[in-house]
Length: 147
Image (cartoon, rainbow, N blue to C red; front, side):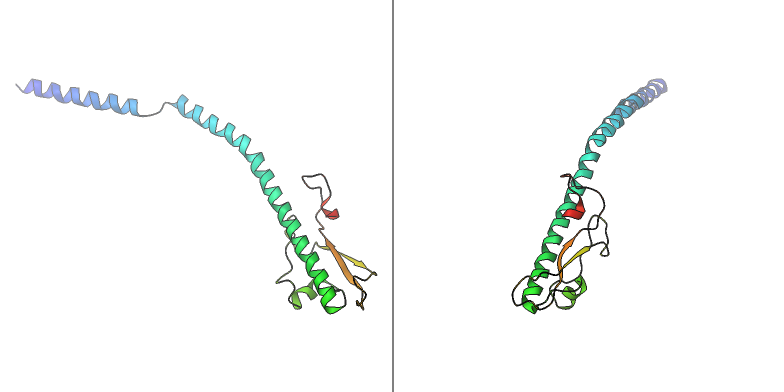
């Protein structure tokens, strides 16, 4: 009578082993899944890099707009143009000098000093415009230094 009991154990163990073997993945299945993931990442990476570049360019446009507006407002309020960007910060027209998002530096801004005045009341010329000092061209094909 002990014998049928032993056979039942062996049969139950055999069923457990075959169920475990069927629950896993084979090496080929794993390699196919990894290959599909790599292919999808190959398509996603360039798009991600383009979106990061476009975001930086958008921030650059916004920073230039804000700084140019601050220069104009300072010139109209003080009746003289600022001599550098730090004057805009000291007078409260900017919180800080923004970093150029392309170069990641506050030191690369190119100031345009002109002898012309913005208004009739202006007594002293100075900074009339600011441009990016970033090398290279934008995604639109224009150099950053012309923005």
